[in-house]
Amino acid sequence: MVKVYCVGHDYTYELMELLKLFFPAEELQYINEGQALLEGSYIMTRVNIASGILRTEVEISIDGQKGKGDEECNIANESSLVIRKKSKQLLKRVLLKLLMNVNGIALPWGILTGIRPTKIVHELLENGYDDHDILQILQNEYLIAFDKANLLLTVARTEHTFVYPINESLISLYISIPFCPTRCVYCSFPSNPMKQWGHLMADYVDALCRELSMTAEYVKQQNKTIETIYIGGGTPTTLTLEGFTRIFDVLESAYDLRQLKELTVEAGRPDTIDLDKLMLLKSRGVTRLSINPQTMNDCTLVEIGRSHTVEDLKRAFYLAREAGFDNINMDLIVGLPGEDEAMVVNTMEELKKLQPENLTVHTLAIKRASQLKEKSHAYVLKEEETIVKMLEITQTYAKEMGLKPYYMYRQKHMLGHMENIGYCRAGYEGIYNIQIMEEKQTILAFGAGAVSKMVYPRENRLERVPNVKNLEHYLQRVEEMVERKRAYF
Image 1 (tube, rainbow, N blue to C red):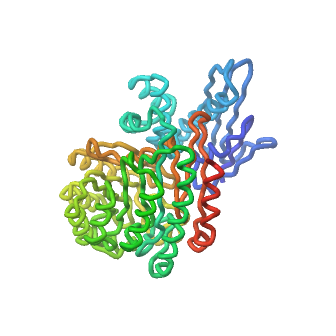
Image 2 (tube, helix red, strand yellow):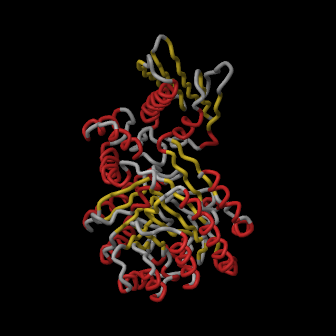
């Protein structure tokens, strides 16, 4: 047990997010009040402000290894918000330096524990900083390794032209189809296996179309323009031709789509794709398709709960090309149970033959709602060093395929504390992906488990407006989901 003392501050959450990268959460005890009894293993953190000087101090003793550190800065005439931000940053920086010395663990993302690190770079760009200064700030103030700092800058530079200047009249739509053929072991999304829930598909499409139609009235009243639409899941291609037709009919009749730049459909499972369905999607204006193998190794597909083969995946990809799709994304996951570096090489060799326009590389994250978390004892997961090597393999192949990083994000509980990166050919950037990550555009979300993000740029504020996750509850309460959105308009 490691006792964590917080003196002169209440930054327990921020410290916890950083400390759990070094210690299992159950080994930490946070103490905010009372006299510090410095014995055994402990971490003493202290914040003091006097005469316009902010000073942070950290003292640690872990299994007999001790260390002390401090930092201070001038905060005279700063607002309380800025002082609080600087206090957290200084405290985390001192703590991280000591822990890396004691534990011998290097964190390439430094003190950053949030999932959208590019936001820092966007703010610096908007404030007029040049590339050299931005790289220095990322390395010196956030302790980010140079390669990660350079990745952040590269991605943010690409994103910036799509996000700024902010146009408040533009919004995007997300449409959730929460059905899947089977549930993958790593999945934590709202997803209902067809075997148990497929009988509700038609009723779900009815409810979804009502939500779309009723919300359209408020979109028109606010003079909003639809920039992108993303149909995700689950696996949207579990829908029948009739289901897709109904949804597209509602979209085209209820919304003004004349300025639509991108319409994406996730066709994640090849066992849900046929030529008729692909031709329908193409004829209804779908511009971007996502066919997601996760791996190109058959043994791993069985391990993670997928009911298709690598050959099925290739067949679906070539069918999409036959249907006229020239913008295809493919997702893969690094760190899947049982995979080694040679298997990642095999996956990348197969994808290189297919030459998709987009490649999204995810690092496996162990989410609470996944089977992988529930049965973690049954899986052997990779160490950080192996994950890093696997990501380097994907990065090398992406470059060989002419793909450059254009968006990225991080998740909690990721193996190796790494990142997810979207690569693309020039001109094939996924606009929706950029907007959902940077949170500078309102995204209205429809369907069970969907979460709308209402953005108020002038106030630098974002409000999450969730729909209910349970499928049956959604069917019964769809009018309430519309009312939730209306209240924020």
